[in-house]
Image (cartoon, rainbow, N blue to C red; front, side, top):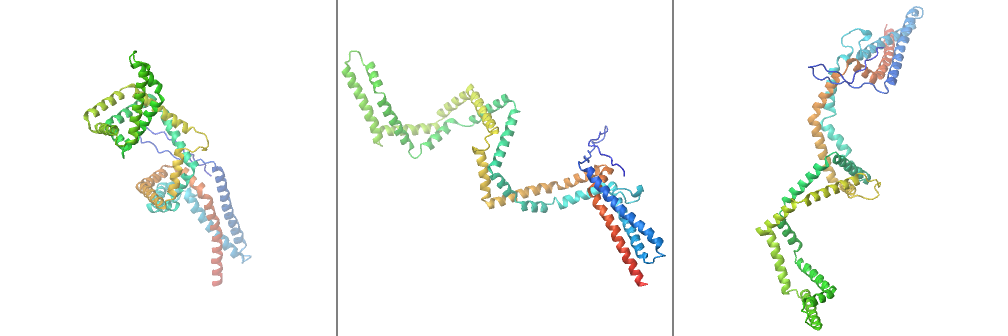
Length: 441
């Protein structure tokens, strides 16, 4: 038995020649056991053939003395023919029988290019066709299975943690100063696209819609009344300080009382009277302010100038730095979180709820399946010819002897049963033919 040459995983290309296609690594951990089983089957098949030969010789020598041995001889003779024919056929698949270069032998070694082409065509036509891919994908319901997997909070947590961990590794590999400068530039560019005054005016208009300014004014008046009540002594001292020295204290108290009473009455009237002139003035002033924010060129220009002054200041860089540090800290904290999932996280819960929502919508699951099947089948359909060519070229690049040996280790043991069956069936057929001819004489 020839020892197969072990193919090299790398080849040194010659100067000026195209790069050689690397041959596969043939060695496998179970090769020794597979070869031992193959050799054992070969010995059994050969032993059975030798037994048939011995019986044939003995029966041939004694047939004249014992005519009934003709049946045995015919059986043994046919067994020899069947066994030898199957030995030749099985051996011819992998090598030249007896080392003789008989045409159409060593088929695997000499026809590996054709075998690769046939294998590539078979794979691309029977495994990579749109119909096969679509049928197999539709049978497994990929959208439903993915949704069931995602609905498990542990799986959702795995996805979110892996995403956060990968994002953190990416951020660690990037220059922090450049990222902070980039973030500062992004903040500046984003803020520059927003016209501050009109945006503020629209926001106030929405916030104060449906006469909500009345609620704002009432709250302001109540705060003012409470401030007056809580600061009476301060007001008394202020009145005393502002009046001349020659004014008697009794007059100071009168002035103080007048001020307190007037202010409290004014505030009470504003709360109780929806048509109070000050309310009307407040509404008019507020609406005018909102209108000017949205449409006054002077106000808009002034706001833009203030915005640009703020953007060019150091506070923008400080804001970007704090924003960047906050994002990094949040991602790092989540990526390294080891609470075992006891405290739910919004991202985990969102992914799990998304999976549950998908499971409750069969129509959407079917649509997703159709989309996945169409995309997958489209990609496979587009590249299946390249895959078939890759298989053909890969097989063609293999070492001939190693390829033949690998095929023999894979299927040779089963083919030895062909030799055994050929010996036994050939003997039975020979016995049947001999018996028929004897009766027809």
